Length: 189
Image 1: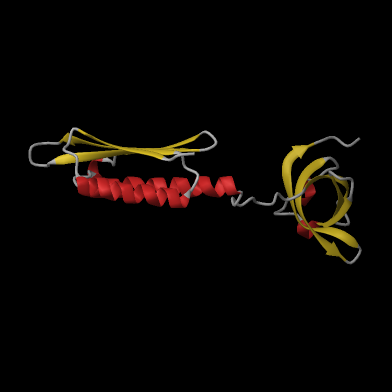
Image 2: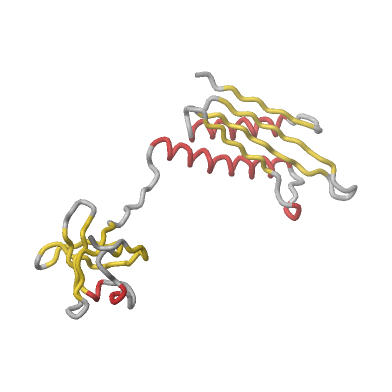
């Protein structure tokens, strides 16, 4: 797949130095994600008040397979007006670099996934003895003690209460070292 790049200057004289800088940054994008299929860069200017000069606006459109369009439409807030085209281009490409790096990480599968703590329901509870058992979704039975339940919520647990827990090996088999009631209650059967 051929890579296509276009650079457009609107309402301003084309600058070869600025064009060369943009081409360098486009090459960097290609190194960050070698499968990009196109990049369109538009640099525009608008005249500000007579003593302030020009304000530069940079838009970058990048196409990456399969069907991803990444756009940075960089127009800084009024208090950070870009009166220098090179600064405006730098800031826009810095933002695009971050987005392309993120896209490449997602496509490679390098995005971190967080382990979800197991869920279960309270199968039995002995309020006087301060212990109970959790039934997991795969049918196992996990022991827990009142000290493992977060806060003062042990007394609110009933058979059928939904909980999240952290499992560890105990002296008599699997036990929960941390139990967090989720506030949903399912009646016991």
